[in-house]
Length: 235
Ligand SMILES: Nc1ncnc2c1ncn2[C@@H]1O[C@H](COP(=O)(O)OP(=O)(O)O)[C@@H](O)[C@H]1O
Ligand SMILES: [Mg+2]
Image (tube, rainbow, N blue to C red; front, side, top):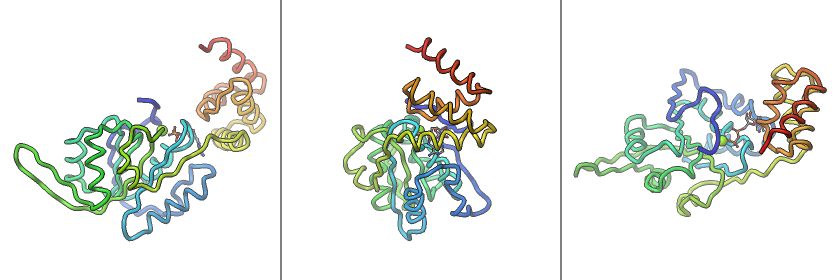
């Protein structure tokens, strides 16, 4: 797997919610991306499914969007790398999810990608196993992420609204880092020093590195020392 999932998230978690989520509260953990949030809201209020694929570099909040979508009633989360054809199809027959959330869809076997084609276009799920055929139809929105589109079938791509996330600029990077760290109780000057050290000294554009440093450092001096030490010991 190319990236780690946030703690507590495993493949194919069902998320039974008793109450309908307030759409205004969705995506509140995500800083920025107001246009993308609005687009999701439009898709969610559409009568018929409009599928969305987020493509972009690591740590650009793609998985975070998927996690927020799990707040929706009858949503089901699956990791592309962990699905198998029969597994996913059984799942669809059994649970009939309204929202199918696929993180890192590029790792999904081609066979599964083929099965998704039909679900996304017509809502039909069909399977022939042991000479028996079963069919069903369901209304399912597919929300997915991918680090790239090379490994995806072109017809599958064309069924999505594809949104390419760009690498953060330093200004957005620093803003997100500060928001996240302050939320964790880090002083804002230390948080600012962290984003500066990660971007300029470690030459990293990964927000995760800010979180690591921010959790370790108590002072700006700590930040300097940590950045220096990490530089010494990196490959
Ligand atoms: N816009 C953002 N708002 C809040 N947190 C963010 C944002 N961008 C990145 N992060 C943080 O960066 C980390 C990686 O985000 P993630 O959604 O897993 O990225 P991706 O799936 O694109 O690799 C997470 O810990 C997340 O909290
Ligand atoms: Mg991810």
